[in-house]
Length: 152
Image (cartoon, rainbow, N blue to C red; front, side, top):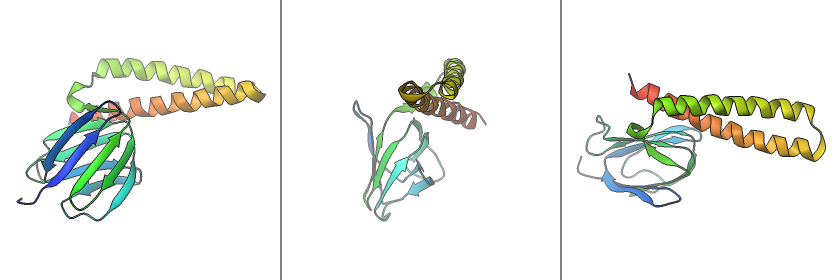
């Protein structure tokens, strides 16, 4: 493919990736979307999932990167993803993620019980902590799903 698209992946800490690619598939808030050169203008939320990068051919994924969420901006020449967290799939550790998932599930369950029995400001604080725990649990679940999908 002669025409390329500039893809940039940015985390809060730094620019993680900046390269010309044939195509990129992003886990958008409304579902995955592919970006090719000449794509129409688009701004989308990014849900926890995997970005697939196709460097030269649309049939060969050259990089798979887990993102925990964020935003994507697409122009005809560029796709920029501003990610909350970004990690190459190859660097994820299944045992560590399984342990983290178990701890987060237990914490979320405990917070659900607190929300059910508390009242007033204490309940509001527990509900806020529960939303945070559920978000972290969703990211851990998405990482495990990304590993499982890469294993087949």
